[in-house]
Image: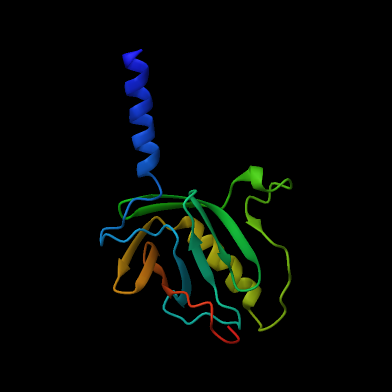
Length: 154
């Protein structure tokens, strides 16, 4: 009986430490929403804000410029793993949960959206520097600022 209690306690501590752990600067990403300001050192195109939100149930969601997306996240220290490829999310096994709208303008928006989602899924490190969230995959970086949902036309 004591062994079961110890195992349950260890499991609950492990589960509680995943996803809600503060970053190296002491800021938790849980409950935050961010807007992309730089996509590999370039300003994102389009009129709609590209966003990324973290909730308390190990989920991420946002707008990729045209379509909404969702998935799972695991955060530990400065490491993160975005899992936007849960095949159980999509009966067609497209390996990503997104809406399926087509946005013809501006030119290149759909290509940018695809590259953004691929980079977000493949990134493994993040940091919070000042008021910026930086998610990296090697030399490639997604840079976000806190999202202000009262912006006009974005």
